[in-house]
Image (tube, rainbow, N blue to C red; front, side, top):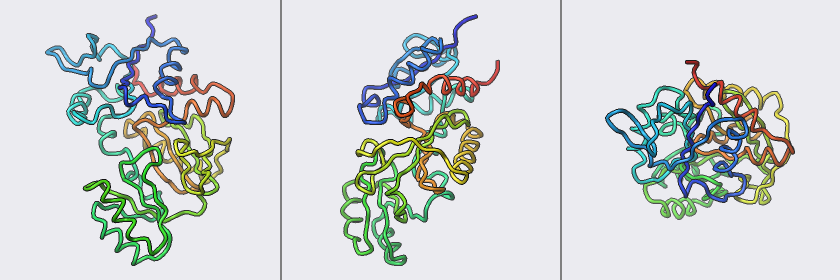
Length: 290
């Protein structure tokens, strides 16, 4: 019986050395250890020929699963998405439509803390003044905890300063949750299944991301957390999203990361066990039967 084949799309800038995210190493290794035939090419190796989509001479139709690690190069990204959208559903671990529309802090907002999203600083300042209290300001398209600011009620000038650093970008103004000081829970979800969860505890009372010196700890989801994560996991699957990290504080959603969520290596180290087999088994269930 031929071995299943998977293609990982890994561009140099998407490999990185950020703490807590070693997907470019851990994901291909998990599939190799499970007996899959693993190929690794760059995102922009994808091109179309008269016979279909190809990567480095190999037809994409021959792969059982294609797994982009990160978005790839910014230049040509939407052209790349257009090509990838030609593939059948679930040929790609996360659908191209989802990569364009569902990654980040705007998705599943009904489960999040009270928030506003705007590209105009004054809109967010007006919200702060209308609803006094502490807020968090962060770039809508940000990652690794970069650009996150804790705002007191009178710190409206910080909104202007930070948004002027990224002119035209959208920002999120989200109600500050004091509970974040106790930690933010990351749950890694594959094909609708929770593979594992761990707590990310901030060392500065704010930044839980491991790239911002947050500390990983063992945790167990309580009933309310499980209910929330399982509901989102089910919704992810209906939208052909097979790989995501769901970040929560108590039973409030912080973010759903579907572009390149780190966590597998952290789970392996933290619990001293290999979560790779469970991830691969779940991914196998994501692929439609032929």
